[in-house]
Length: 153
Image (cartoon, rainbow, N blue to C red; front, side, top):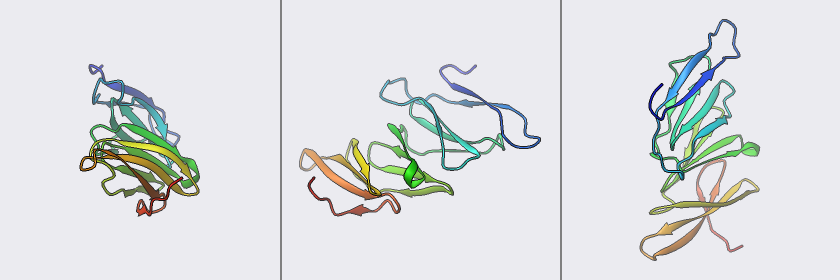
């Protein structure tokens, strides 16, 4: 067993596929960095997060995995209605869809993205702006990841 690693025994739901142990390195021991398992929009993949290091593991092909580039991922949010799994970092958001990476947002914050809510295909949140030393709201289109005009409310 790796020190602090997340170990997941995978039992593939595919003919002739053998079970295997996926070992995911621990990113950070800070409790703010998530650890856990999430289903993904790709039925053959599972998302394992260990201390903010996020791995998308192909359950049919043991050596097939993708590591999300954010170090750390600070939040994982499933948006089932849109078929997305969102990975929130310090500055932006990466969305994973049924065909892999769907989009990555523009920079939303100088240090700290806070999600406020999801409704009607849009994600609302706030990001800290260094120049104003305050939080600025943002609105993202969940289909494209593009910023929309921010409206009060």
